[in-house]
Length: 233
Image (cartoon, rainbow, N blue to C red; front, side):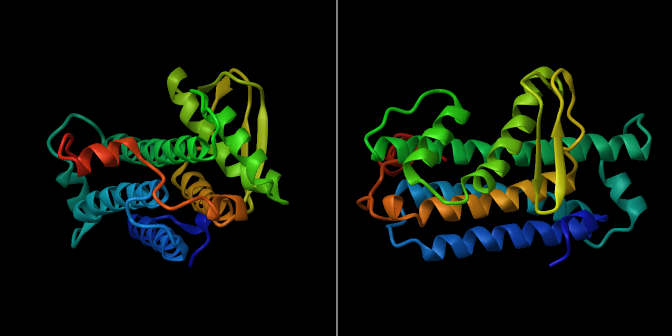
C-alpha cells in the first residue's frame, strides 16, 4: 500500500478507499459477536460510509480523462480547480464526519453495555471508555480520535479550531491545531491517515479483554428499530 502522503491522484484516492474498507472488513472478521450486535452495526456502518464515497468518486472518474472529469461536474461558472475543490471538500469532510459519527455511536453503546452513563461529549465518552479498557498504549490509541474530533469540531466554526492548541504525529504525518486559527491539516492525505489509524484504535478497543468479554447482543437503538420495521435505513 502506498503511503498516505504519496496519494496525488483520484485513482490513488480510490486505492486508499479500498484499503480502508478492507481493513474494517478484516476487523469485523475478528469479532465473535452476532451481526446485530452494536459492534458489528457500527463497523458495518463505517463500511457503508466508505463504500458510498468510494462509489461516488469512482463513478465520476471511471474511464474519463481529466477534462472529462471536469465536464462531468456539470455546467457552472467556476474554474475547473474551484469546481473540483468544492466537490472534494464536500466529500472528504463528509467522509470524516460520518465516520466519526459511527465511532461516536459505538462508544455510546459500549459505555451503556459496561453499565456507565454516556454523555453528549465525544471527548468525555472516549476518555471514559479508554479508562475502562486500560490499554498500555493509550496515548497513541487516543491520538487519531482526538485529531478527527478537532477536525470535525472545527466545522462548527467554519474551519477554525476554537479549543486549546494540540499537536499529534499519526503514521508519520503531523497534525497541528492552533487555538483560534484555521485548521490546515485536513487534506485528503491527513484524513485518510487519521481514519486508518482510528481503525487500529477501534481494533485495540474492541479486542481488549473487557470489551471482548461483554455478552453478545449489545443493542444499537436504530438498528433495533429497522429490524422491527419501524424505521428505514
